[in-house]
Figure (cartoon, rainbow, N blue to C red):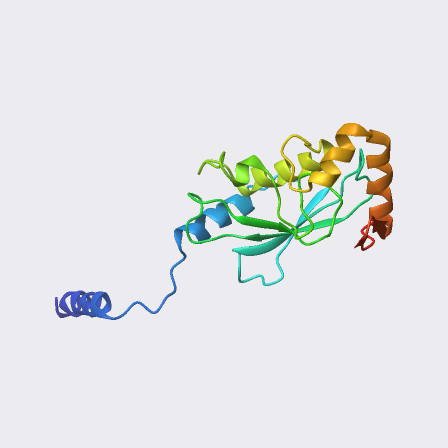
Length: 180
């Protein structure tokens, strides 16, 4: 009987003691779930520079068809505490000649802006990014010059993409080599 009271007292003492374990935020829990459920195509991979920081990671996309075949494009993902209600911040770290990615790496993808919904996942974003390389959209450009070339002279656009991926100048802008 005495042991029962001492156990109750220990439990009470434990409830009043400050919690020393670090709890995961809602964003961390959701990202963990998204990462566990990732179903990436063979052309995509995820890299965690800091394995203890799930909210900051990189996605590498290596298209195997269309204009960007053979390229290697790195995107940084920064997931805020508002996730999944707010979309992650996604930037392209690889300078690319693309109508939907500007020279600073900003990405024009509707699900990262006005069409974001909390039911969307990291997987949805990766597939959206991959689709941009398969079907660049000149109707909603960030790089207006690339979009105009794509609309008016598809062959020149293809040549510019190939030249930029090999490492070269398009106009007065130099692109680093990004071929695998």
